[in-house]
Length: 250
Length: 288
Image (cartoon, rainbow over the protein chains, first blue to last red):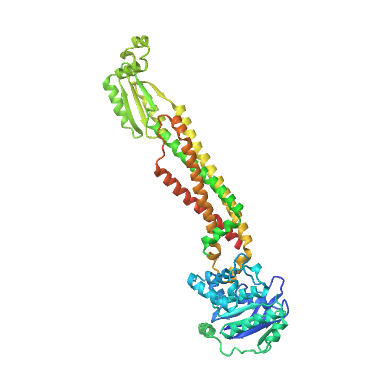
């Protein structure tokens, strides 16, 4: 579960990346995050991965408030989120196999485990016969599929795809979207930031969060934060206790 | 790929930069090993002189045997005196005869009663020689004290200067090595900035990112140390016949293998620390 609670992020020149954004995304959802360039889609991703700290509000990720994650535990948090970029961000000096294996190496998996997992992922993205190729030898669609396989390597709870089809033709775009839908059907939460009309058209029945100038202007399937997570309740209780104690003292 | 393999890959991908780092580290370590042997050698030369009679006191001609023995006991009791040797008039005559055996005229003219008895004193440390000289001069039985102060002072000055030069050279070269390795690793970190960014996104720990650069520095240190020691060893083997001839009766060569083992292990450890620290400094600075 991801909760954004009145989250704002301000940059140096007093412009907002996002401004008082609130939403709740439940486990296993597929959510489109749309809006024009500069609307705050990438800022949302950087806030979830804790590359940015919010100036206001709080973010809850899987029952943990992000501000409570200590710097030394940040890598563990990031391993729970698979990130897909428009420009793939693959290592050009490594081949397809090595790129997909990288998160598993980072996570300290055994060689046997890595081999099994990478083989499965190559099958999933239909790149079994391209394992030894390098980035410059791949088409845009293939590179993006490698990027998706890499994002899935550690079986993260959430995938954040930031304009994954920005550099692709229509046919390849649709194949990537099909792949992301399949991944979502297998139980992974997928956040898809895009302003690609092909994608929006193909996923018109999907929940859509729309941003403009950093503000959330619409949420097609808005979910009410009915019950606060247990941690939040506990903290409120603590605060109330403190207030009561202070009043008693007075 | 483990961090060590990544470090080797980094080195292979920029061979000239890596060669520069290895050459400068080799130079540093070669100079360090060279000076450590020189310092050890000069120390042993000093020890050699310290174990030889360094101050000679000549007795008055009328000094009796009991007075000579008493002076001998008195001097021997000093804490800074290592050894004494008393030479009687007869012994002095036999030495004289030995030295002038080819000149019968000189031998005819000299008898034991005109040669003074003497006391040869060696000290624990060269710095105590002046004290011994002063002690002997205060004794009534002693007529004259011979003390080769200039030679000993000069030797001490040389040893001290060599130590300072060696330490200064190693420090300057060590600093240069540190700066060069740091600069080269910094360049490599900059080249891999995108890859580092990607690894951070994928949840790489700080050590996972830094380790290849740390090991790269360690490899430079290790290789530099082994090559530097190898060059020093070959040079020593080459110079051994000349050195043996030069040193004469001073027995310094061959250098015991224990000395080499201590020298190589200490040098390699310091080189590894220097390389690793340089690599780590570079990557930390660039990742800020």
